[in-house]
Image (cartoon, rainbow, N blue to C red; front, side, top):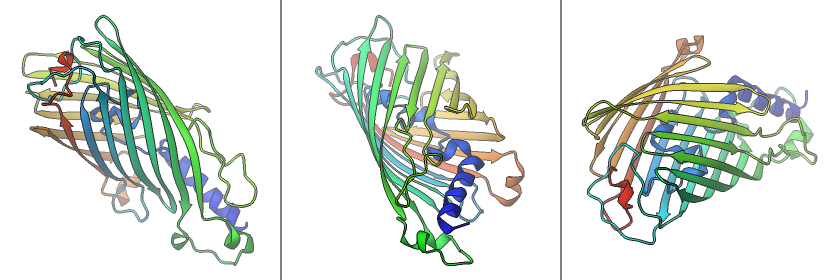
Length: 323
């Protein structure tokens, strides 16, 4: 087998090893749904900046790593000064102004010798209904797909691979829809719409291409009293060939300042998460405990999240005063 075919086969192996990770994998997406759905941009009314760092299967050489920086805002026509921000996201609606949301997302996703670094620019349009909001979003995505030669060793020289491109620039797009009301949120999104073929040599190989991914998320906010609420949710991820994965989540929110959660991911993982809000800053941590034999060689997966949400200024919506 030539080096070129070998590296393509190696890429397919990494994708099949963790099918959901042809796109970046996150555990704390309930704290930043914009990472999965462009329609979320500006839906909460915040001007927000979020940093996420994920180290998967810590202890294994060349294990997957993901780092992301995202920002989003709502373009407002009217001004309102809110009292404070909160962890909860649902509240009654009010103002009709400010229907446009904008967002940007820069990421680096490493999976063995495969490296993807890219940027996503998003536009969202929010439609106020009687007691709810319906949002539509679209993203333009561009990323560099590259292979790290230093992580590969071959027995024989291969002229074709030596002269092949080691880096490819790929344009793509994502779309999504998002619904929220005082108690319910739900969204559907599609990523990697173009299904670009990987073309490291002079001709493309249609069977080696980025797959289109579908994300369906939904959750329900259950207030127990003025200081405590429970938020069960589910995320279903699938490809066009119906290779799917689901997360079943339960998040507990205390006094609008602390949260803790537990998730089960099909394929064998338990996720423990928690966090705290300090004024405008949000700090979160998630630990993935893999239920497969890989845990014998790993210290689990760790994900850290830091966010800042500007809510105590003239960019806040009146109907978002619970944040």
